[in-house]
Image 1: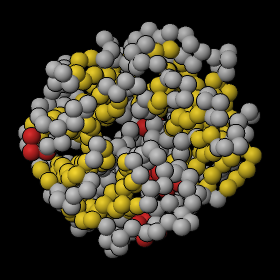
Image 2: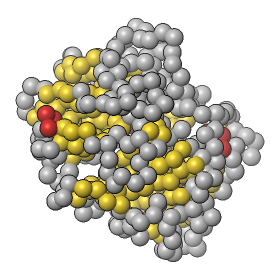
Image 3: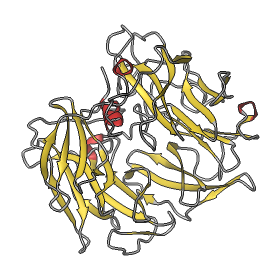
Length: 463
C-alpha cells in the first residue's frame, strides 16, 4: 500500500515519466530501519554532502553522512539521557508517530539535529565542526526558556538565510508557538520574537503550517485552533503573513499585535469544533497572480467531507468555494496520530493561468482538479498525475501485512535523491502486539526532474 501523502508528494512534481530511466535495481542500502510505525526521517542533500537522520532497527536515533561523490558513510548514534515519564531514553523512539527528526545546516556547515519530541524536554544536538558527524554534541538547550514541554520542532530559514527554529511549548489544547534565531558567530540561539507567535492562553493551541515564502515577498502561515487533545475540537481556520517573520499582519495589511490569539486571528473559515477541520489536511499555495490560496477539509451542511479553497479579497474577507462533491464522511475524533483518509496537495499555478490541485481519498481514490483562477471553481477533472518515481519504488516489497512505502525526495543542483523505507501505518501512538521485521532503508539517485524538495511522506502528524 502506498500512503496518500506519498502519492501527493510525487504527483506534485508535475513531471511525466517519459524517457526516464529507472534507478539501479537495489539502490544503496543505508541501514535497516524501524518499521513498527511511521515517523518522519530527515534527509539533507546540500553543500556537496548527504545527511540522513532515522531510527534504526533497534529504534535508536541514527545519523549517517557522506560526501555526495563518495560511497563511504559515517554513521553515529547520538548520546541520550533519561526522559521524564518515558520508558525510553531521549535517543530512542517509542510508539509515537509525532516524534519526527529534523536536520539543518547553518552558514558554517555545522549540522543541527532535533526531534523525538512530544511534550518532552528539548532534544538538540549540534556539530562543533562543519560537515563532521564525529563532532556532534548533545546540548539539549537553545535559550533555556520554555523548553521543558516541546513538540513539533522545525528548522527553516528566513529570506536572509538565517537559521530559525520553531516549536510548540505546552500541549495539545494548551500551547504556545515559539521562534528562535541562531547566531553562528557566537554559536548561540535567541528569541526571534519577544512573545510566542501563536498563544493559546491556556485554553487552546494553534496547529500551524510551516511559514511558506510566497512570490509576493511574504511568508504565509495557515493554522487551526484546537481546544483539547481530541482532533474533533479543531476549529477556526486562520491566517497571517510577514515579510521578516517578526512583524505580522492580516491579508489586507493590518498589523497584528503579538502574540496572535484566538480573538485577534484573521479568520479564513469560522468552522466550529466538530465541523471537520483537521490540522493534517490544510495547505497554502498561490495562483498565477501570486495571490495566496488556502485549501482544506471540513464537513458540509449535510455532514459530508468536502475539500474547500479560499482566497482573500480586497475587503479582507475570504472568498470560499467548495471543490468536491463527495458523499462520504471522514469521521475522526480522539487523540494520537490519526490515519489520514483525505489528502490535499499544494495549489499550484499552471502555465495557462488556472490552478492545479491534487487530491487523494481512501473512499473515492485520487485525481486532479483544474480550477478557474477567477471564480475558484473546478472547470475540469483530470486523472492522477503520473509519478516521476519508477513504479518498482512505489510498490511494497515486504510481506508483513499492512506495510506502506515511506519516502523523502531531495534535490541538489542537477541531481534528485530518493530515500525509501517501509512501515506499518499510524496506530494512534499505541504499541502493537506484533512487530514487523526491520525495513531496508535505501537511497536512490533518480534522473533530475524538478527543482525544490518534496517533503517527507511520513511527515510528523500534527494530531
